[in-house]
Length: 108
Image (cartoon, rainbow, N blue to C red; front, top):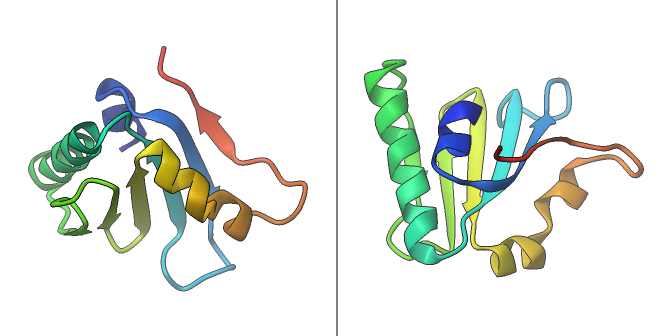
């Protein structure tokens, strides 16, 4: 899943371990796209790969507007944001304990 995001030029990819902290899933992945169009494209390509390569059912919300797209696979929840929207909601700060760093992956 992370490789798909990297291939599609998602930026500032953060993976947060939710095991034992929340019933919404085991991991949360947060990333950004540079525009609404890119956010929607990243989300759609990830959905396609989840379906074709992993035969994994998932739900998607927000793809029409492209400001914030949520993909729920059951075990993993993926948020794809425009940078301004991500900054506004600051999900990383909400889900990470004070002082803890998230795993961040930068495109190469």
